[in-house]
Image (tube, rainbow, N blue to C red; front, side, top):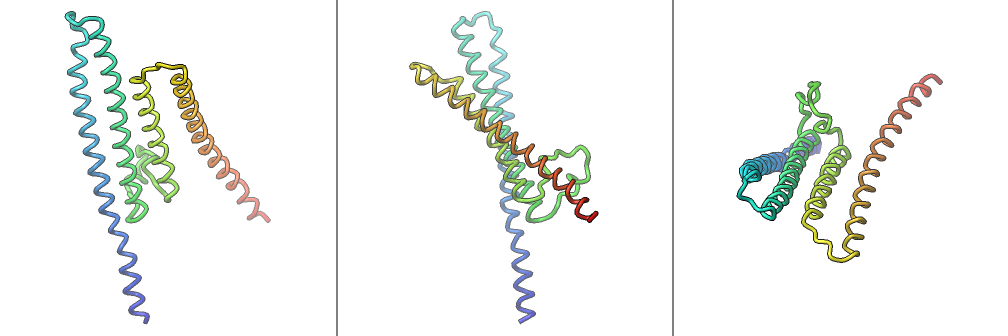
Length: 193
């Protein structure tokens, strides 16, 4: 029974490497989105060059301005989504396969890419997804036509809810830091007794 158990546990432990499909897939998806957003920036810049054209009417210039701002928001949205895929890929790798030594040993590495547990991964993803939602709301608000006073109320309510979400995210970060510091202060006292 001991040999079977040892073989089974070895196979079970090594089954975690199947996560590499998600790691590689997420990384490739992130690279693809970075590429598409960058191509969008190049085309956006080409279109924006016509903004100073003297042949443009005021209405055409306003239309170009509005479409340019809308496309910039779409590009930001694309880069944020690519960042989500990158964080997801690195987080899965660190959680299931191995620590990324270059990320932990480098002073220039971003803290957002160092994932210690599943809660870290979820919180980092949630923050970036919240930013994507904010950018999407902004993009839709730019194209929104307020025809009734109720439309204005809906826009104001959505902005208030986004503000509340940002506040709660910020408060939960500082609450966690305060709890960690409080636990750190209590620990030496326990050892003293």
